[in-house]
Image 1 (spheres, rainbow, N blue to C red):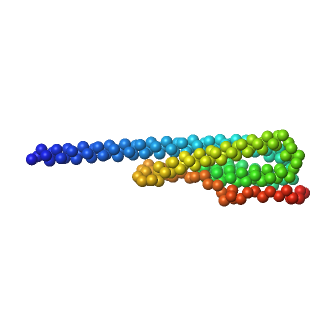
Image 2 (image 1 turned 90 degrees about the horizontal axis):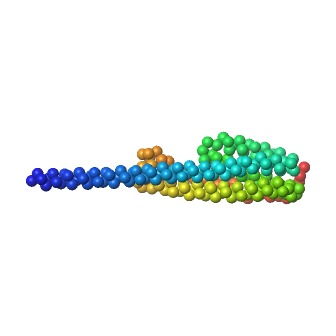
Length: 197
């Protein structure tokens, strides 16, 4: 009579151990996947920053080239300098993206201003810088898109069931997507009839 009870207890014990091991392996697998996606998001954010740095390296040359022809446009040069300072003060990817979007707006305005100076548009140096800046902007857009794809995969992992419970336990927070600011929906105003002082 005792033998069936002991056998039943042993079977129940083995099943509990089996399910505990399965649960442990599930948690370990989830954790490793979360760490991997988190690292991939960090690496992809680094790629976005690389492209921003490439653009930042071009800006002084572009500004100096435009300054040589458009000395009366001091306001935009000041705005670009201020925007570069804000970029340096950014402490998170979201702050950095907002500051970089502001810089994008000022660069667009700078290029619009350049349209008012035919000698500048004819300058080989300006055309080369403009082409290089356009290529860099394309790379930035591509890296931002890749960053959002990684964040989407990571967020899916930490928000779905049962991953949300694991995420809370291990301290994983959902990542933030790059989202264009509302001003990015509006094209810059181009007015070739503006009076030059």
